[in-house]
Length: 418
Image (cartoon, rainbow, N blue to C red; front, side, top):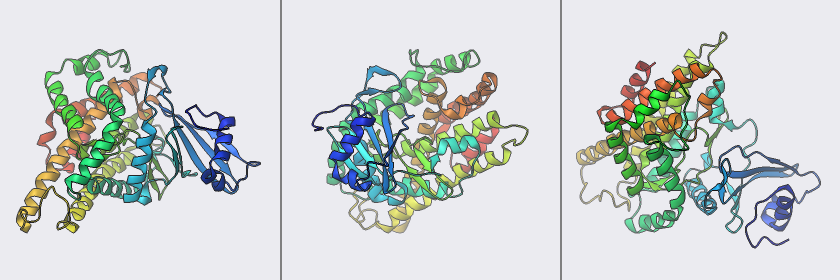
């Protein structure tokens, strides 16, 4: 059975596909007698299979030419698998400890085979809902974000290298356009896809659509998202794109990857931690009021940014005489000036991070795709109260992001809105 043109893989054709692909059949020791295949795609877009035998295992991810959770009425390019494989390999080269290895990519079939993150790895979002602390999360995520953003930016690279990769990733325009729509457009207008916890948030959703200052600020963020090719960003770095154990952190699903503003990735991650913080009251019970856990989340937010700042600027210092063309050493030729430039860059990046993080929060409350953190709170009035706090904080941060001088001020603001 040849796989010379695209077709969706079901269990039977998947076995044929593995047999026809030596790198995959070798991974399972050609042991087809004890092969176990399980479809686990709970995402919105793709088929995902775990393939395991006593000799080895891997995950197969296949992109479909439409959005899986909506169906063929919302077409979506399967080319996204190419950009996901590209980003996994590039980010994996820069930060191998936190990105699963890609074993095989097939552009015709839109298939990626990669390392299976075995139990006890779970999706971070589920761990946050369960109230589990991950002591190394900030350490690992700051590492991943600092390395992937620094090494794909002009702080490290020449404009020639940078432009070449920007051009390549411009091909992922369809997924970037989806983000433009669901993050920067839909929540601010009447859209058939929007939903919220009605009737409790009816007025709040309307207030978002009628807030002139909010719309002004969102336009600025959208413009930056569309026009600023600062680094190779993951493009969808929420807590559902991270798998964790007590001592492992793995970033998955970079199918939205493109060259965009650095703050979009850091903001997505921190914004989703803030959503998790506000959801905790909805998950509290007699046994556990979640107060200590909320403190851990705030600590993780603070540490993620602080460690990122430290690691990113350390990479910058380490390569200050390298080939990066953003700040040429002949011009930025003394320590005071370098410090000045760095402080300005990082301050702007904090503001971008806050803006994008807030925009991601708003869209998860009044837009199309919601988060399990809130959705799993069965009592609608309780859920709405949690969402309302998150929404109020997000609107304020988006509009006033440039007033924040440090992450500590942000954490203080989060504590005050509850």
